[in-house]
Length: 110
Image (tube, rainbow, N blue to C red; front, top):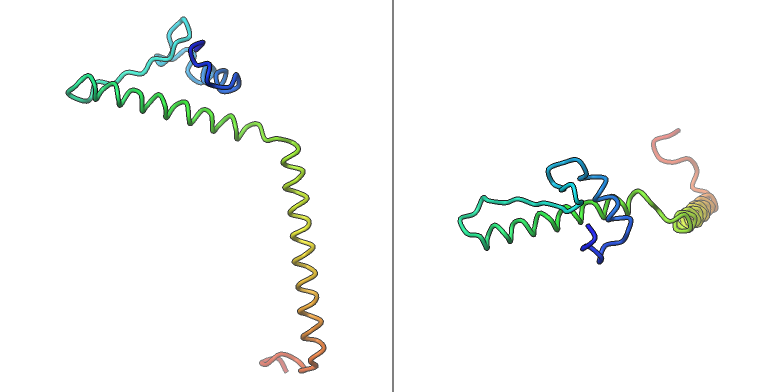
């Protein structure tokens, strides 16, 4: 796992947690990907690299999902509140405009 210096420490730790104690990781902490479905060594190597890439990507996504930025959550919530308030103001304006028309009760009621 030390050779994966391009990964963040969080992703490396998550990979270690996910694959430790399985056949996908050696006692020394190296990831092992086996592939022998194709007829050539090059095709098997390509498929093994694709699998490794997929495992790293899945683990990285799970780390991103687990650790949301608290500041981002605050900004998202503030944006939701502003959108809700704007929607309420717009509904109120439409309601007042319709009430000002004085058209009586809606059709079918009365």
